[in-house]
Image 1 (cartoon, rainbow, N blue to C red):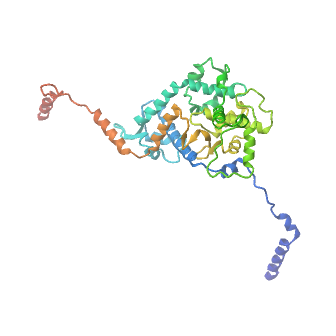
Image 2 (image 1 turned 90 degrees about the vertical axis):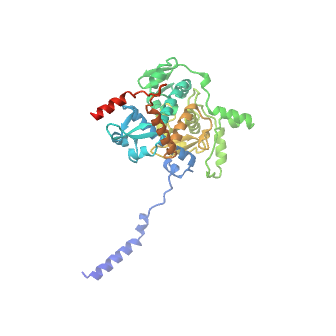
Image 3 (image 1 turned 60 degrees about the vertical axis):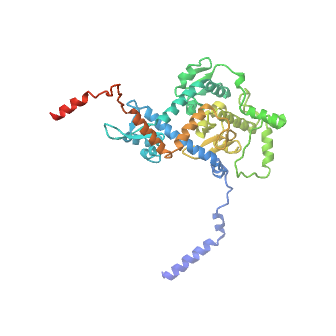
Amino acid sequence: MNPLSTFRHTIFQSTTISFSPFFLFNQKRWKKPTISAQTRLEDRVRDTHFDKLTTHFKKLNLVLKIHNLMSNRKRGSFVSLQLMSRWRNIIGLNVTVTSFLQKYPHVFDLFVHPFRRNMCCRITRKMKELILLEDVVMKQHEIEVVKRVKKLLMMSLNGTLHVHALRLIRRELGLPCDFRESVFGKYSDEFRLVDLETVALVGWDDELGIAHVEKWREREYREKWLSEFETKFAFPINFPTGFKIERGFREKLKTWQRLSYTKPYERKDVKCGGAQRYEKRAVAVIHELLSLTVEKMVEVDQLAHFRRDFAIEVNMRELLLRYPGIFYISTKGNAQTVFLREAYEKGGLVEPNPVYAVRRNMLELVLLGRRKTKQLLACDEFKEESNNVVCEVDGNGKRDGDWAIPFLESSEKN
């Protein structure tokens, strides 16, 4: 067959297929864009204050992880850099351990071992004092921690919680490492261990059965002269800068604020009343849980462990993203962290607590980085000079140890 005729045949065949009526059925139909939690997370208005705060707290958590690994070593207060280089995957660092330690000279002290002549690391005296101070403050405010755990148990459906869920947010609640013995065992009249992984509430406390948002509602009722109908079921709303308010949004928000719901400490059927009331109760429970934490923030994945106990079996991330005026999710770091908006102002807590104050001092020490290292070196030199042995001089002008000088001179001559 002639090549020219073959080419004409292929061209004719392609044109007939492209203009045939059957080609219309091969076209892709337009699909409506799906709105999911991921799309809401990507399209949300970002808050730089919370994002920066998340980044800073992630650095502090990395520092505390290294401290925990170092404190578990029983051979001494220092660890060689050769051994610490194996901890990179355990800590979750993107850089080498040595380069990370060199960024924070106010936290980590790098020195050469006097006998082995290898590089070692130890925690600085100032950071050690802050870590010890945190433990002291937590013990001093142990009653507040007991109240927090009791309020969480009172919010639960059956008055019980999984110990594993509490262990995940132990630091956020201000609980010590051994809270099973130091809190549950010590306050046996308040808590009862059903089994190894379940803790139950012994008695109900009516004084603790008031949500933190009720204080704001009472203040709004007194100071702004709002009616009880407007404030009884309302929440404080603080939208981020740049948030776009669409048509009809204000009316929907006003209706939602007036919507009644089963409050966190009320013993009623939580599923009755419709989907909107069930969802508003879930918002109230998460709001109360965040208000009980030290820094008013928790990782989103950790909240999922409380869904069944608190009877809020919803998609946590999607629920939090639907209420940007109450919560903010930061995606900085490896995990997503949710903040309580009303609790923060200008990058800090509106009502700071003693444990938060100590952790803030730790954070400031970490954020110093390499700044003010000259002052740090001057302090080290002063300590070395103070550690040197000084000979005492008696009234005759002789010093301790002068008797050894003639003995040494005679031995040199021989």
